[in-house]
Image (cartoon, rainbow over all chains, first blue to last red; front, side, top):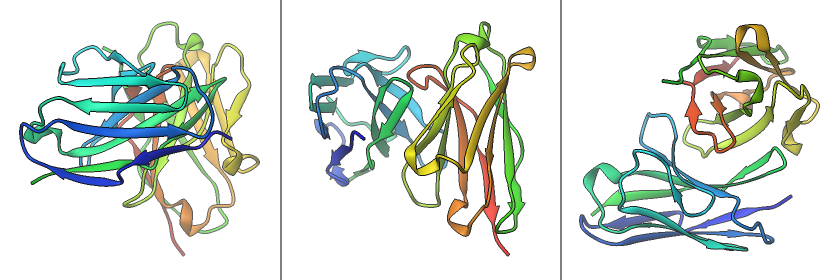
Length: 107
Length: 115
């Protein structure tokens, strides 16, 4: 099975900062990775699909990049409402694997 | 607007089973991937399995093979997920999610396993 390793597991940043979360796959996965945001007590929300496509309605400060085994989610200018846990996820042939999550806090 | 409405919270004894439903409002239900994801208290998201109703055969994470059954009824646009032989570690919120990229999510169903 393909494993997805996220880092860091948590991070603290200031409003306006550029924030990057990484996800490494245990083997090459082409572009089949999605990113989700889960705010405390809420349902997860799709942010980025297929590595770099922005889901409709998601602010443009969110972006994704990468291919093969290394992927990143970037928030260009952190906002207070971005406090959440972020998950990467690989999918292929109706099998899905989540990363362990990155908890983002505001300094 | 796509809506997924899940069945209500459950309290179960160890060794028993639970079946959670997920009714969708989507058109072309049969062609969508329906996934089930669980989240134990304070833990991350864990994909359990999924099904495409038009194909009928479900796919499962290795951890849940043999103990979880995922089905779908096309006539009612409803997905189901059953877990058997429940243990305390199965206490979690169970979500259904629709779409290849899990674009749409149900509200979650809390299943508590306790003697």
